[in-house]
Length: 103
Image (cartoon, rainbow, N blue to C red; front, side):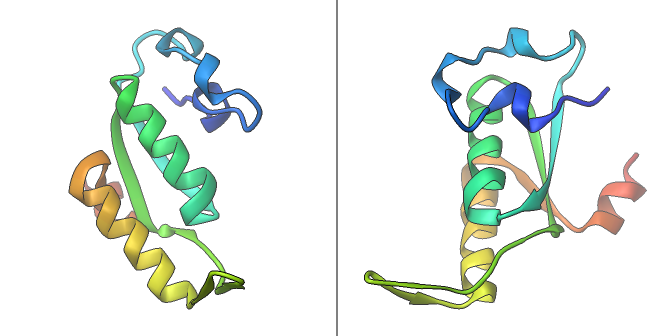
């Protein structure tokens, strides 16, 4: 069964969601998409806090290099930092091929 990220974390009101927003029987959320440090990271964190298992596909997510008044970071550095943080607490980070093998 699949549960869309919007069931877990709509952009406008993430705090108003509960596990009841997904179809019954869903235990695992697989994160793919764009941008790693925004929607993907937020959805993974919310899913974990709501009691779901989370698998974060490292090559199924991506981002851009960012530069603003706070500084600059390359896309590779930003992506890697989020993946390391996700693996540390929130998600099982893996490549898509490895995810497919475990199905």
